[in-house]
Length: 290
Length: 226
Image 1 (tube, rainbow over the protein chains, first blue to last red):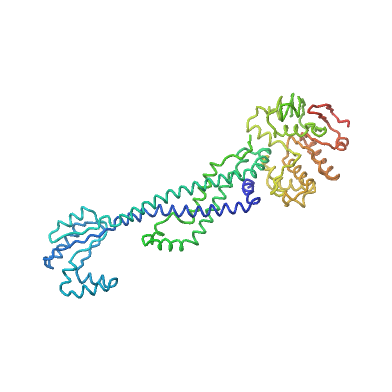
Image 2 (cartoon, each protein chain N blue to C red):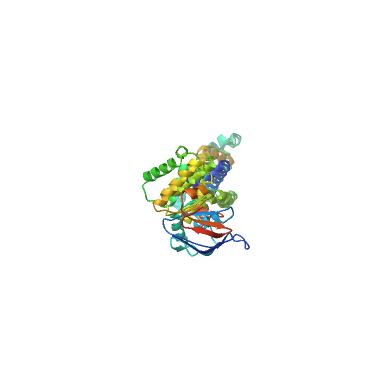
């Protein structure tokens, strides 16, 4: 009880400095949580994009419509259990798809009459996790004229995401280290307050541990308070934050659901952890307790 | 209980504050340490309270040689001592009650909390501090703070009580309140070492005394004849 009262002495003697430190640590924790979330969620997003490929299996123009079913069966057989959607596209399906977003193009194609079949060749559109081997198997199917494959479709974006994930990890580590450094330095600044009480406790028969404990407990209390503050801020700000991320890029739209790290209890836990590290690394006060 | 043999202490190479002092104090004794300003009274009391290190000669408390005592022995010795320093040393943002209770808590008392509270209240009452028990120590006058330090030392139920000018900032009534409490503690078995300038106290409550001058014990009497 007295240890806690002594640990809270800086709050009674220098409240403004403590409040400012708490706010600073709270903001740093929120940032650290944000970067940790990115570092956790981006690899998953990356894996999703890597698997999202498109292949167009163009059919032999001379093939009879009756043979289309056979080709489709062969394609499905080649896919096996892969999560790939297969959709048949002919001129009419193409027109229907284009109608909404590009009405002028749709009108031009429709104006071609029977020739539209030559402009928009019949093909099966495959979407999902598609590899080069599967594409080779598709090419070998009788009745297939050619296969267009979007290999490395999102490659530039994937590389960007990798860079952002890596940068997030570096920034997370830097912020955590900065927080520990801030807590240790704050401990130094408060050492005058604690050394007085340390001397009194020591003189009255307290063990060195009893004498030093309040000074070391203070950073844990401060960091835990900052974790609580960051958690409350996160609860208030998360919808705004998710909207901003989605506005940054449509790829980030579902990031909120893929970022389990950024949650109030985990921010509180991170605060506690940072405080515990500072607890272990805190220097002794200037008074030497024998 | 206390044994000093050729005890010396200096803060500079040239001048010794205490110069080869030898004294012995048995359990339950009462010793006045007298002397003018700069005679070395406070240094001697700080040494007895284990506040000072690096001294010459030998200083034994409770049979332990302080120069060789381990950390845990030193803690045990400190738990048995009640010390009223000249500068009182209270925790300013603690209340009067908390300052006294902290002392009791660190003495390792195994008495029930309610009993401790009762004992502290009784002491505060006798020292006319009861109305200030919830006041912050930073708001106390010099005399009040001194009485809190005395209450803190006495509440621990120490085997050895060391008080440096405990009545220096007290009015007549409080001086004798304090002395009455110290005397009662002595009668109940506490060994007492008290530094004072107040000759009136020494004359009225006659005990053993050691008069220091320039770091040496000039006169030592079994019953002070000032």
